Image (cartoon, rainbow, N blue to C red):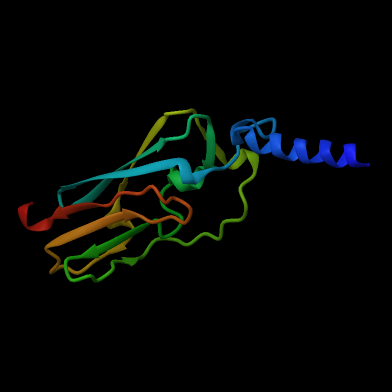
Length: 156
């Protein structure tokens, strides 16, 4: 009986040492905490464009839900946009109730891999016409490695 308990403890300990990408067969496990999200903003013809770069900082492959990379446009309030007075822009896009991701819903990032997406923020958000500066941050739950970007609207 003691040997069985020791074997069980050893198995549990060793399982904790296996990188998440190897924990199960198929796609790597979902791990949004290892994805660094950076933004670059530009204003062209009164359209605020955000180039969003997602980078896997883990030493192994990870998966994220494909809707977090908004290939089909935004389906939820993905960004926080504030003006210089701290007013938050209103999200006017669609709101889709997302259930747990299935294997078909997962996008795999290899170790160190980057993926870039572009979105026209005016298509989904409204902010004060008097705003002089905006700060934009990708604001999805579970992405702690997110940097914000600023744009001065008076220079465009």
